[in-house]
Length: 231
Length: 384
Ligand SMILES: Nc1ncnc2c1ncn2[C@@H]1O[C@H](COP(=O)(O)OP(=O)(O)OP(=O)(O)O)[C@@H](O)[C@H]1O
Ligand SMILES: [Mg+2]
Image 1 (cartoon, rainbow over the protein chains, first blue to last red):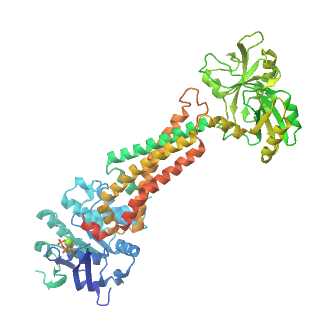
Image 2 (image 1 turned 120 degrees about the vertical axis):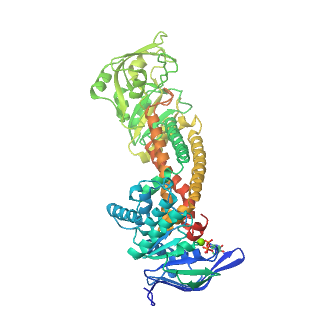
């Protein structure tokens, strides 16, 4: 934990991108604390920097300035290799377009993060079965992604995100590509993971209906965050 | 290996493309194997030539005869441990296309000179005993379906018998095998004494001598000594190592080795471009997948090795299938029905083939692997 007891603590984070000679400031001296056990929703207009912020917390990218501390570790200072190992241990990622490997079955997709551990084949299978059980897809584990519906694919994506039992679950518009019903199922699942399995979740979403599931909602605009109480 | 499944699963991505790539690699390696065998067949003997043997021929040409008396003179020369002779008979068996070398020799001495000719003891004794007896190498015997006990009629082209008769009859009493894969088992050998006595002309002359030197390092000095011994005689000699002698023959058909190497080089350059392009394209299409792998914790090195291993696996699959097929074709034997009697896949070239497989894999995989390693997750995910 960081000194103020938050699981995630972003301090003074600035992120600029270079596009040719032009410099784009996406995050401007941004501060964010996410306490353990929170289900945080990040909202805001397109291009406001939500994904950029999520990537910093996930260790997929580094701030141009400022610090990112997760579970007491300054991840902005880790080398690329150390950061990869850190991601494997601490974060589960869920993407808008599921990003499953089409050549692998649901089961093998979920197993991917476990290939980096020292678990035996039998142990890996046990973890995969548990994760698929949590998302309710045990019966489809031998199926390839293209034979699954969008909602089912996203559940496989979530199972892959939680199979290593990570500290943090980060989701970038997890329902963005789903119809209302499937989207609701996914949100139900995330809520359960937060409530019953005490997973800390940060979710980026455009959908106010989805944000309502969160314990806290933050709005992002022009590189800054502003508070808004969850309804 | 748990990552292996990941690589193998990748093969199913674009099945047709994978199959076509594998096929083109396999074809290149089939060609490589066959050309290696052909080159070996054409330069046969050079590699297996005894380092301790010299061939002494007439200085003007191999066609010129030497006096049979030289053997004793040569054995007097310091460093020479043994000498025997052979001659070119050049007869025809049934029809001119059925070519194989026939040599009248001194059986006991000849076999002592060529220990790589393996003849069962009883056949050896039978050959030594019987004047009209002959032995043949396995390749020639099998080519014509001969077995021990057969009568082999051979038509003389130059060496007619007393009275101008052309037909020579030999009793096949033995079939020899080669101790090594490259040993020449096409020769047909019979008694010089019988030949010399029965021939129309040229009595007492021989075609060439084979000389064993005690110290292979001494070969050049001894060759010079032999040529010196017969200098200024009516029949001057040219002595050279067996390897050089055989090479001289091989060179007459042009530098086949270099031509074949050029062909193999061109084929592999093409394959390198084809397989390299396929690999690069396949990795580019999977940018998102590699980004996801990295996102879930695969390091840059993991991703680099995955791509390299995939390229190696493609090269190995195509390459070993190709080498296997060429090995199979080669093991069916001489495809020309007699022109290339020694036809096999040289072990050295097999090793080169394995090396080429690995080089092909590494070269086709290297650039895409480096690209996949450099890939920045955040950028790649945005591009999805
Ligand atoms: N790698 C990059 N290079 C250049 N510009 C970038 C890069 N990543 C993000 N940006 C820019 O930063 C800004 C914020 O992008 P970001 O993806 O964080 O927005 P977002 O809030 O997630 O938007 P959306 O809701 O559309 O996903 C955009 O203007 C984008 O063009
Ligand atoms: Mg975004």
